[in-house]
Length: 138
Ligand code: ATP
Ligand code: MG
Image (tube, rainbow, N blue to C red; front, side):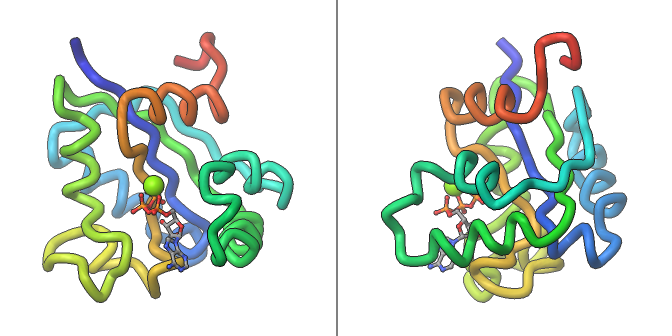
């Protein structure tokens, strides 16, 4: 079965005018855009999205960043290995550790402002997709 995943072009990359380049890269790698929208998260909505990280020391700063400007969530589909494929294109969380040719190497500023999010597994992907998109939009 074809897997779907959620990516988010984060506020830093939206500010850099990089939405188009980031989506073009996924399309070039054979991924299909299923749904997309621009959304300006409130602090509370950013906290809701990142609930799994609520105990982490960077939670406050991360959710400030994610609610600092519009972001661009996108549902991608690309065969059975969509989720690991997308994570590989993103590169390591910390751009200083990210491989050449990855999106975070190219667009991220630091470990927090790292340009793009990608779901880390099928269950997370389902939860995260439904956080931003209703059934009719998919
Ligand atoms: P994402 O979930 O955004 O795809 P990830 O799975 O590579 O990234 P996580 O460990 O899930 O990384 O962390 C979620 C987000 O929290 C990171 O993308 C980054 O924006 C931020 N983050 C992670 N670790 C740190 C840290 N040590 N300091 C500041 N921010 C961090
Ligand atoms: Mg993660």
